[in-house]
Image (cartoon, rainbow over all chains, first blue to last red):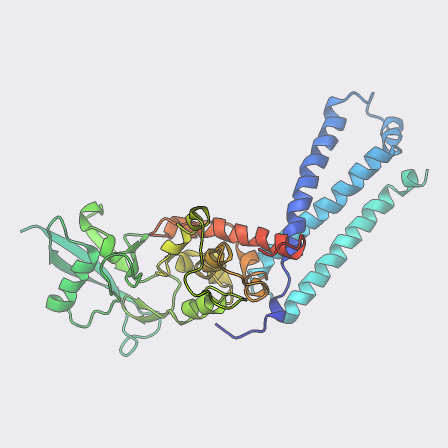
Length: 120
Length: 241
């Protein structure tokens, strides 16, 4: 075993814990999402009806939670896989930073897409 | 006289190039009580004195003779040839481990990682005059993990170990669990940081090869999951244990 310092390997609990928390958020959020889209009758599928639903605070919260949880769960899962392939030290830091940039970028993009209804 | 055929993986660091392992076949007299380890003794004593393998207790207690026999992780001493199917018994060293010679693996890393998690009872008070009392209920929790004989089967079978040389491995984490759940152990910050990190408990992806491989039928995966939960309980909820 190469003698590496413990500090280099600190952490791991928060990613692990949030992977589980986001899993629960995804299950509940997806259930609401599917229920609202396919079971509850919201009227015909047209722009006005969808826009009307998006203005509700409840669906806004569900949608943004789903977006954030989905992005974290997917990218952290990818990180877990990649860490098995030699991402150590500086490369590990770069991987974490890169995934945060990608995740936050997509989240901002998602918020931007719904911005008109958020401010309506 | 009935016979058993052994097909044994061979490699000699002095005469063979790295990766140039070969298989030698030997015929051993068979009776219904013959174990694989006894077969190896016969080969070494009568047929080929250069065969190397580890053994000690011959009673499935010491964990020295763990090998890959007929495609499964087994202890040579507790594997009866009668229970193996097929015409030839294939005996190989533990896969994914550095070789010393023939069936003997280099266990240096294995034991370094075992020592790293401090596998002993830690107290923060003076030792009592007599014993440290423990209720039958608390003792019952230790029934399974104390059966670990450190044979290396779980470690050799774990894909997380293959991919990350610094991952502690199921054996070390099972041992950490064994002491963390012990009501007599009072370790606070001494052991926790050693398994609560990404080369410790969180590198386990619950593949459960270790559960499959363990000749003592223990469950290191479950123990590692418990350690992950214990880290949360202690660091976020402030529990002492």
